[in-house]
Image (tube, rainbow, N blue to C red; front, side, top):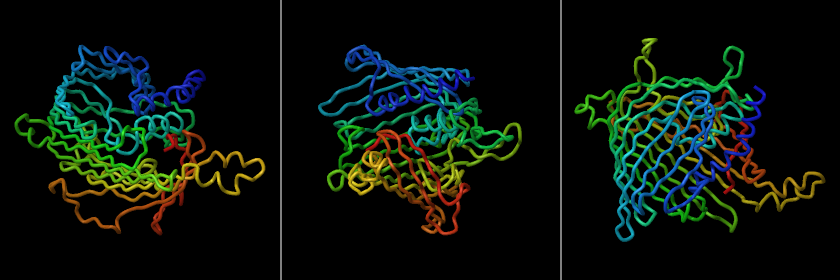
Length: 420
């Protein structure tokens, strides 16, 4: 057990920073761009424990390649993989793609909350997993177009099966974020999902005016996904019939030479049945792979983990302001004996969030908002201290009078995220 604990700490220190860099800059541990590339595929979560593997690309020629990824969940004792083949067609400044893939993956409906690598770190260090997971296995065909590297659109159709996953991980470096179950700290239970076969079509778009994903310039980044299984439900006699939409708007803004501001608006909507009957209990349970939860790190930071649950409509507006070394290092605090060095190397940031999840009758169209108003929204505000390039401590406070979180009037986070 001691050796396993030590390996968790080593994993956090050595592997997740490269994993972040790999995700943001398409870094490969081995690169031969005209032939073969390999990158790490690592994570830690309550459904798999330590998951380790690799992703790769093999180029038959400039416009035809096969790619895939494969890994093994140590605690779960099962593999996960994806195999794909893609053909690119060049036309002046445009690029068209035709792609097919087969997969058996662990997925989540909470990817809008925060990046996977950040969730892995909170799970690994604090036994706090912000994702609920389920398994999907299926095939997808995609046709896409890329305009000048700025505007990307994909149209896809697929067949997949949903399966419930249970918690497999028990270990973490600390247990401060775990729930008390039978007197011991443990990961929050991973809820069951509605199992069955799904036939769907989808439209994805990504409009990014930044020169690269790691650049902070005055720019917009818009992305979203529309998914529909209603059109194929009667033809294929599938188990699901729904529409769902996710939209995200980001505005990056530089101010006063060094200071930076980031506005983010996230909207999500699901039209379809929100409950299914549990096989063993006969109880009506929420279809967790489609519904939305918010609260805590990554959404409403002033509230407790998943404080608002099982809505089929979601809205989150976040604002982050980064002084980027232009405030605390220039104050009298740097003159304090013994502490001045800390403030010389500490950045201040401010933030605020507003949003909510709620339920609209499942017969209403996907664009219907129901009876929701500003008085129903929850809001918070706070500040953070970026102590290194990777570590930030944040304090968040709920703003509505009388609204208390389960943890009290404020929440403290130790956050691992790169400075802007």
